[in-house]
Structure formats: structure tokens, C-alpha cells
Image 1 (tube, rainbow, N blue to C red):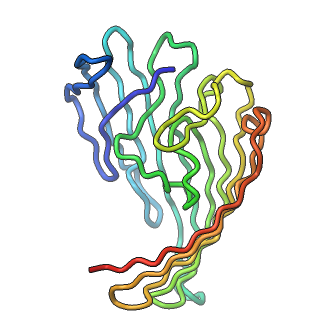
Image 2: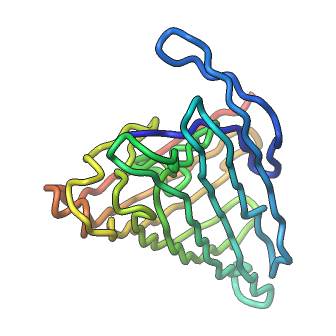
Length: 227
């Protein structure tokens, strides 16, 4: 299984730079090109496109990632209700160990990118992620989210933090991964004290279910003191 290591960022990409990667005791240098495209946005959103091409040794590289977060805040509604949707596509490769390197690997992983359960790394997936946020006060917010996930490449795996394939990519040809239901609250109890809570229910379907996966529930409470 081939995994591409690239340099990316939340608001920018570094392009046309040779990258040195240590592999099997040696240093391999490959040239890659990265492009970040910022489209016209409705409401608020992030740069949505990272494209990486080049070579790693004798292997060609072709990987990409697209991220979007678009929404609308109803200022006249109670709690400044925000209705929004995330939609991502992140490329996968294959499980044969040959051909083009296609699995996009974010260099600075944020394992709670999807939710606080931290059960998936953002590699080889597509998703639709509608959510609602209500903020009745400046120091208090509530969120409800539904994340539907698929594999981008049915020949690649489902990855757990910090980028470990959980199941062989060729275990079955199902694309659907499942759904994550997420309830979360964030509050600033004091100027230097944050209290956050979350409940996540992941429903395993398709690829994961056929491989023996099952539903899980995760709950969490975080008390953060800021110096």
C-alpha cells in the first residue's frame, strides 16, 4: 500500500518544492507541485483544493484533496442559528503496491477533523456533513452534525489515526463507510476556563460492516484551563 506524504496547510500550500523523505534508512527526494484554488464562496468557507503531482523515486504521484465548508447564519433567529454543510473529497490509492501513488496524506493531521471520537484519519474518503450551530451567548454554543462517509477509492483502506490502514483495501468492493452522529457543546465558563462536551455515535455500514465492523458510541468531557 502506498501513501503519499505531502506538505499542505489550512489556508495555503507550498508548491514546486523538492521534498526529502527518509525511507528504509536512506533519503529519497521527489519533486511535487501543489496548487491551492480559492473559489467564490457563499457565506464562509476554506480554500478547497490541494493537488499533488510528481515522482517519488520511480513511482508517479497523483493525489488530491478538496475541502469545503459553506453555510448561512440566520441573524434574526434565536442563537444566531447557522445552517451549514461540509463536503470533502480526498484521494485514495490501491492495495496492490504498484502503479501511481494516489493516497493523499495530510502532513499535519488533525484527527478530530470529523468529530471528537478520533476514529478516522482524513485519507481516502468522500463525505457530506450537514450541521447546525446555535450560539445563544458569545460564550456558549451547541452543535448537531451528521457525517455520511464513503471511500474515494474502493481499492484503498479505511485509515485510523495517525494514518494506519485498519482493513485491507481489497477486503471488499463496497464504497460506503457509515454515518457519524455528533452532538457537541462548547462553553467559556470563565475568561480562562473552557468546558466542552461531545457525544458521537458511529454507525458502521458498507465496507466496514462487511469486514466485521460494528457501531460504537463515544462520549467526552474536556475542561481546559488557559494560562
